[in-house]
Length: 296
Image (tube, rainbow, N blue to C red; front, top):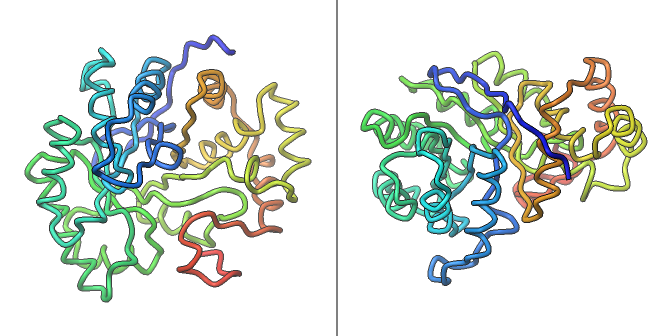
C-alpha cells in the first residue's frame, strides 16, 4: 500500500468556494434500500477510514439512505468540520426542498453542507419546474444551510432552462462521466458557463467497461506512471478540470487512488484516451432515460 502525503488539489467554484478534486462517495456499494434500515457500522467505519486517509470531500445524498452513517463518521473522525467538504442531494423530497435540507441536516447532525445538489432533472415536466426549484435552492444558500448549490445529472437543456432565471448559477453539475460516456459537448458548454463538472463512475473504462478500446492505452499509461488503470481514469478527469467521485471499502485501493494526485498526463495522452473512448458507449446509470446510442 502506498504511504503518501497527499496535497489534495482543489478547484475554485464560480461562487468563490473551493472543492477538493477527489471525493469519497457514500452511495453505490454503501447504498441502503430503506431509510428505516438499521445503522450500518461498516459504512461508518469505511467513511472514517477514508477521512483519515485524506478524503475530506464526502459525497452523500438523501436517496442513498446513508446520511446518518455519514454524520456519525464525521463526528467520530476527529477532523474539524471546517476541514471537511460535505455534499448531499435532494430528489425524494424534491417537491419541498426547504423540508428536505432540514431533514438531511438532522440526519447528518450538521448545521450546513458545503454543497447541496438537485439529484436529477428527470422529475420535471417543464422549464418552469426546474426554475421554481432552483429558486428554492438559492434560498437555501441565502439562509446559510448550503455554502454552494448545484445540480446532478442535468443535460445542457436543463442547465439552459435553469440559467434563464437564476440569480445564483449552479456551481457544479455532477454526472456520469468517463471515456465511454463523454456526454457530447456538455463539458465544453459547462466550461463556457463556469460550471464545474463532477464525475461519478469515473473508473468505468478500467472496470465495468472492460473489455474495450481503451484497454491497451490504459495498460500502457499505467505502466508508464507506475500506477493502476483506475488511477489513470481518475487522472484523465483531473487533467480536464473535472472533479472525480470514487469509493471503496478497501484501504489499499483508496490509498492507491490518491496517487492520481501525484502526476499529470500529457495533453496528448488525455486526448488519445478520449478518442479511444469514443469507440464504445457504456452508460451505467439512468439507462431507461436514454436511447441505446444516445451519448448525451
